[in-house]
Length: 240
Image 1 (cartoon, rainbow, N blue to C red):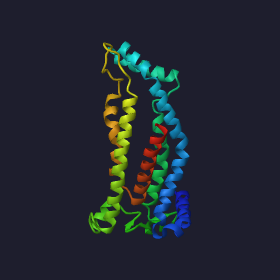
Image 2 (tube, rainbow, N blue to C red):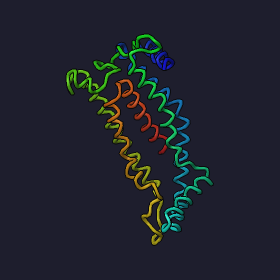
Image 3 (cartoon, rainbow, N blue to C red):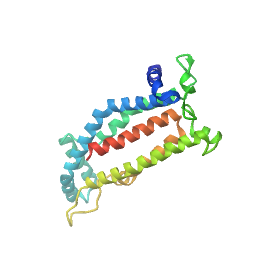
Image 4 (cartoon, one colour):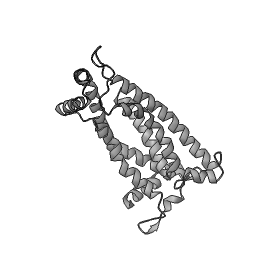
């Protein structure tokens, strides 16, 4: 964690002339952008994987027609097809998984009073009137929803809501484009086993960011908001 703390402090000092009292918040945003740049090759690979999976949909439709009475054989055949074509159904999860360590390190950094045996000076920084180590509940107890700190969170919630709505539309559009057509009389409407619940649930995951922003320290919330915004823009570019 001390490495992340030193990096955030250096970025804060670097950005001080431009952002003044909000330099630590700007440093968190820049730190997030650096993490996303490191993960970008995985995002590009995930986009290629999704396009490859979309190209397999006609063959999956044939498998669905052939095995629609036997879900176990259908699942086995679909997995075998992915293996033969060297297409991983889970490749899209890798960018998110590789970001988790950075998020948890930042979360821990802004939740700790000390770092390396010394006082954590980063906790004294604010975004406008909201401490980077504080949470939404702290803002509610200090001025309420429309207090100085509460307004900072309302702004973040508004950004997250807009980004989540855009992400929801992108997800629905990509899932509709990747849906395998089923020939008439061939078992249409029989889903690949295990995907029905995911299909219903996946478009709404963007809105869970609102809950995360509400419960984590503000610095970690900035990470989540920045990363989520990056993800949506990145998807719009890579999956067009």
